Length: 434
Ligand code: URA
Image (cartoon, rainbow, N blue to C red; front, side, top):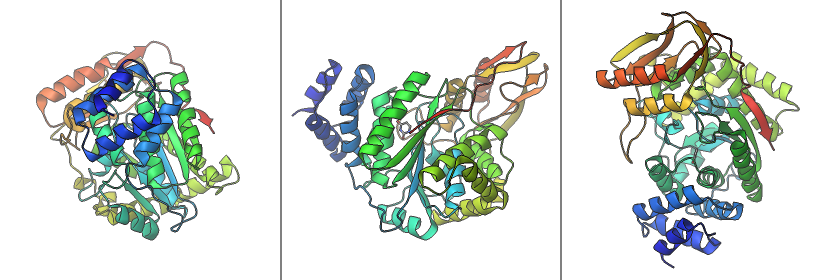
């Protein structure tokens, strides 16, 4: 078998066999298939798609490109959640410690920024000292000792996804259903959690732009998860405007901590509670959604979730004092408030444009291996549905370069739609796929 023939076969829109997929993934993992061949293959998949059988084979090949953890000796139930990618999506930073604070172990493999969407690991690395590159032994030991761990791919865990993910980020091959499904589910299977809630985003700031695409992605991932013996459900949630107010790594860490202190933006809090409630339900830790929500609200209100956050950050080498001292986080040199250019209701804030703006400010990567600027970003206040008068504050922009600041300001203002009438507000949670 030759990599070039497999690339050509997919380029022609043909269906790959399981053997061909295994050959390609194993060769790429070992470094025998070059990055440029994997990038060409990813583009062929992006353009030609894959059957559900191909996607399942790709997922299993990537999951088995390293070790597949069996965590049953640590705990009978290990919980995980994963987002398909959005803008301002700092949900894991709240949901992981919140659920873990109820005594339910959370073991999660996360990703970095991908295209316009932010990445949990990049956000966490805004905290001085935080280590996202745990070894497999560190991952399991921390899960056992602290009941919470969030790490990136290692040489041992889903290495094929780690390599392909970095290529997709910079080769315009992100928003492909088979590539997203296999990327997410290979990580979930390898990391060993047996209870998984997927947060599938839909809308302008998501890779899936329509309800039909998001539902297809959710259903396929749920099917693959079941095949792998996991208890799994998917929440389909709105991603037309940024989630919460903050977009940008350090800014999102602050918003997550504020949420854990009980001061989060209402819509973001609602989102976190909905995802966490599904985790409790799947784990049989709540009788009904109302019961799950009551347990979660109590853990937020009495500080248990915040305490768990601090313990988690500390366990991974991060400065847990950040909880009380945001000055420990990097802060941009230029921080300015931008005001509304006109009167009216805010009818839309195009989340994809917001995500791309933050990448251009330096908050994401333009090419593989770029270092990112954790300080830059934007804080929106008010959001869609609010009525503003010309000159009222719209957002605060954080930048480290005047030219980039000016470009970002223009792009963000162009991302707004104003209307003389109050817009119809979209439900945050569209549906749950079980
Ligand atoms: N999250 C992932 O882990 N992979 C993707 O492809 C998209 C979101």
